[in-house]
Length: 254
Ligand SMILES: Nc1ncnc2c1ncn2[C@@H]1O[C@H](COP(=O)(O)OP(=O)(O)OP(=O)(O)O)[C@@H](O)[C@H]1O
View 1 (cartoon, rainbow, N blue to C red):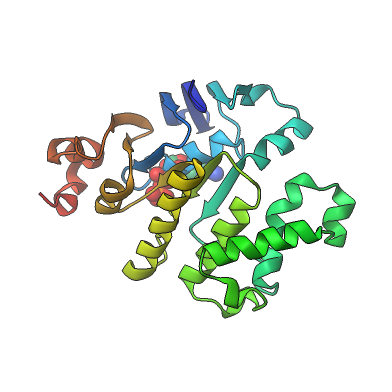
View 2 (cartoon, rainbow, N blue to C red):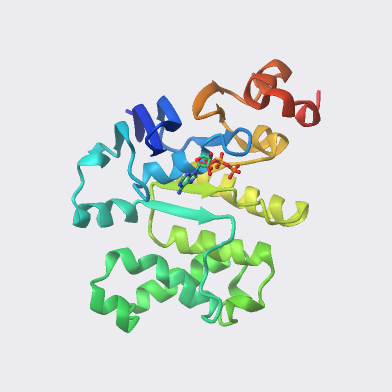
């Protein structure tokens, strides 16, 4: 049984322009899937539809046996605890410490008052610290986030997502602002998380070589349509042409 099922999904921001068209796909538990495609292909829009950060125009999404479109506001809050988000620009609170930012990942489990008062249990604090340790960030736990490098900030973003105990991580261009070394650290962590914790990862990427290196499966989007869905090995130059059109030349490494 798939963890995520998407059927006939379409999205329009404006009445007459479809940004996603008739997307049909399933993603299994523990799968590491990269989504590639030219700028404007609809990669971010697709990720945002999955956790209903934006509403879809047509189609169905089932996640963990739940009809995502049918969720009430309260149910949606619970649904979102099962899905961690990783952002290109990290979305951390700069003036707060690393560990405080990680604990923010628990907000979905709190009442509004507990959230406002910043009430976290000792167990949650220990869990936050252990996650930072797993990501090689324990020595920075009490630093303010604005004192960190981009790669360190992204590791905090990953820890914040993991403390939710998610079944799925949606990563929207997690390495787009990082240099090659920091990018490798982040992608290695995401791969380990997927393999060791059996957490499904869907990662939007601009780098075809990175997608090929890390993914079990690659989905290629062009103009809001799935034009490729296969393994890394099958992603040969003709498929890259189909996905990127005239931009493909510089991306082909064969
Ligand atoms: N909030 C919005 N309102 C209107 N149009 C939008 C909105 N967000 C995105 N779009 C449009 O939807 C299309 C797909 O955008 P999206 O950001 O999903 O693509 P993308 O593949 O993630 O691009 P990139 O790789 O540049 O981030 C683009 O034409 C974009 O201009």
